Length: 327
Image (tube, rainbow, N blue to C red; front, side):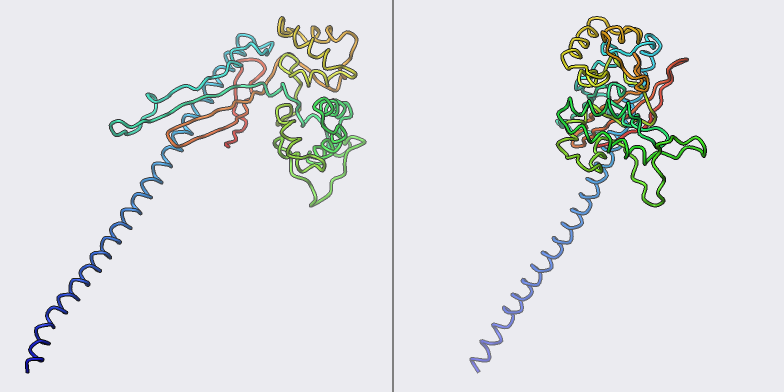
C-alpha cells in the first residue's frame, strides 16, 4: 500500500518534466522558424540593395559616357582637323568622389563611398585588325605592317598571315564579279567567329595568353577599316608603318611629334627621310573612334567598363556609342 502511494506521488513530477521538455522543444522550434524567416527577409533586402547599387552604378556610367561624348564633340568643333595627345579628351579623370550626387538612404554615421575615374584613348592609335583583309582577301601591305608590329613586340611575325586569313574568312563575300582574285572561298557551315577583341586571337593557332597580354594595348577591332593616327600612335606602331624603319627612328619621330604635332599628313611623311608607307596602309592626323575606360565604385558595388564612341568627321561632330563592355 505504501509503495502504491509513492508511485502516485512521483507520477505528477514525471508529467511535469515531460511538459517542460515539450515546451522547450516547441520554443526551440518557434525560434528556429522565426530566425529562418528573418534570415530570408534579410537575404531579400540585401538582394534588393545589391540590385539598387548595380542600377545606380549603371546610371553613373551612363552619365560618364554622356560627359565623354560632350568632350569629344567640343574637341571636334574646336580642333577637328587634328587629333593629338595634348587634347582635352586625353586628360584622365582621377578618382572623384560622388557621395553628394548619389541619393541613398543612410543611417547615422554610415561610411558611404561613391567614386568615378576614367580615361579616354584614341582607338585609331592602335592597329585595327579589320584592316588586314578586304572582300574576303588578305591585304598583303597590311599583313606586312602587322608582321613588323609583332616582330617589334618580340612576337612571332609569321602569325600575321594566319590572323589575316581569319579576318578574311569572317567577312561577307563580295557581289558576284567584284570578288578579289585571292578571295578565300566561302565554306558553308564552317565560317569562324568574327574577331571582336584581342582575346579572340586565341582562336588562331600560335597565340598564347602571354602573347595576347603583350599585344593588347597595340591592337583593336573596329567596326570598319580605319586609318592609323600618326599623331597618337605609340612608338612601336610608328616603327612598323614604313618598311625598314627602326625603333630609334620611330622614337625620334615621336619626340618631334610631341614638340609639334602633325597638322597635315605631309608633315609626317616629310619626316620619314625617304622611307615610304604603302598607299594601301592608310594614315591620318585625326581620329573618329575613341575608347572610354570607366571605373565606378559605389559602396560594395564595383563596375569597370570599356566603351567605343564614334565621332563624325565634320558638321556638328555628332558622337554615337558603338558598344559598351562591362567587366
